[in-house]
Length: 135
Image (cartoon, helix red, strand yellow):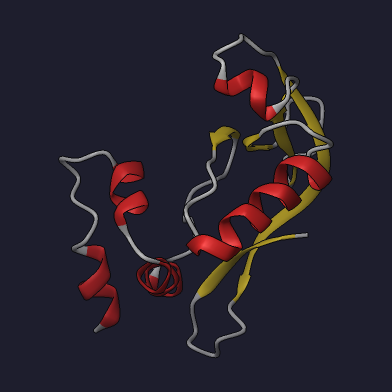
């Protein structure tokens, strides 16, 4: 099955981020589609990166994520169930510096913006599996 084909691509002895970075767009989409929703309670900070998405979409994705969505701050992941919020509420995490300052290795503190709710729900793919839904 497809899941076996792509799950074997993630070698537990290697850094998963490096492995994901080495995949092309089609491989990433297939891996995403074959992955299961988390079966544990999402909680705390989860680091995130934008993966390469081709010569056209990568700059567009970076612009939308860091400049528009992030208000000129570098998006660095999500926080699920921030302590002062309901457990089913999360928030996006951003460095308070600009992307250019971060590239120069200036230290930055994390800011939070754009709250969302999340839950595991039946997949819309009609395959009987669950998906993690962020609203």
